[in-house]
Length: 415
Image (tube, rainbow, N blue to C red; front, side, top):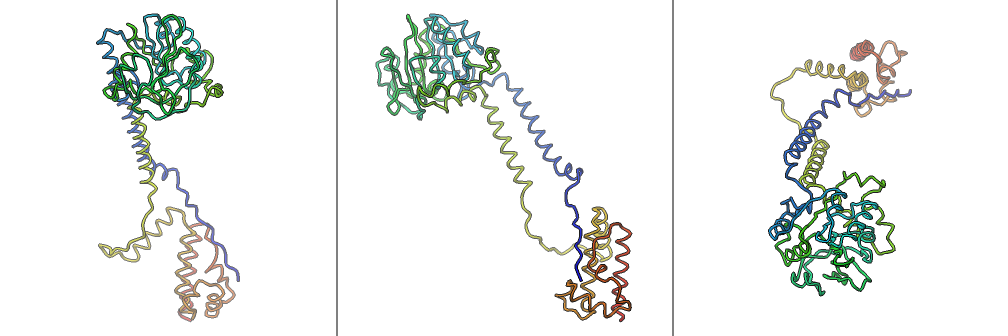
């Protein structure tokens, strides 16, 4: 005799079950998103990016801007290239906080305007491509940690400031007129390069001395005020990703840095930090909190259940009620195969001792079927199909199976 294979029941959840399980998480995510957007909209008027002279955040630069204003220096914020280039002049210092964000054409336009202005241009942590186009004659080298460094040069501003928190991107130059200061691991992190009659370009390897949180340390305030306050006007250029000039040549921010690899190893960290400088710190923290909440929700939903624990029921439940409840669950799930398996397994368990078959062989066709067949009046009936057959295809067939099993048990018991 052969054992028939029972058709498996699909355990895939229905769309309704998926929605029931997921709607709680979706509601929480929706609340977080709406709350984040509302919070950002409320604070959008006061939140600014890093190195923003209007920002009082630790990475903002409001402190140095206020000190410059107290000294009579006018501070103007420019967010487009047109605004920045239009304000250049011999009595103006142009501070470019994110030169790596500028496209190739923007960098070339900015260099053309500043070279002819006879003013000062200060570039914050430019990478190889930006240095090549905005400060010809200076080459960007590898990045090094920011620390308190001595000037080690004859630049008057550096000598008066003394030790300052510098480092970051380091630079080299072969121009004999350039002044290199604050060496980090043998290479300067501040270079001043004359560009014409009274004009110069200052390359600063790290923005640390401009941050609010560092301004009161070392000689940072003195160095920042001297570098930015050498002219009566200061244009604080904050590159914007929405600047129309950024799409004139289809270039991407920092485009072309890789092409200058022969000039020296690039400072990837400086190039990548440019974009983050334009993102308000509140958005970064909000994103981190949402990510953490998503991870915790995933861990919560994916937790593994422990082993089953048996408990005494608070009330006694009649066997008929339990059987009826289970049958209703089977019917709701259309689990005729599982119901049939339960009925057949229970019948085989009861038939085995009646037919003289050990309990361990109750579910073995070769042992059970011959013993049961010897105790029925019609041994030629298909007991294999009855006791080990496939799942019924309809509810009526399932009811018929239960009746046939019950009749078989009564016949064996009375034989």
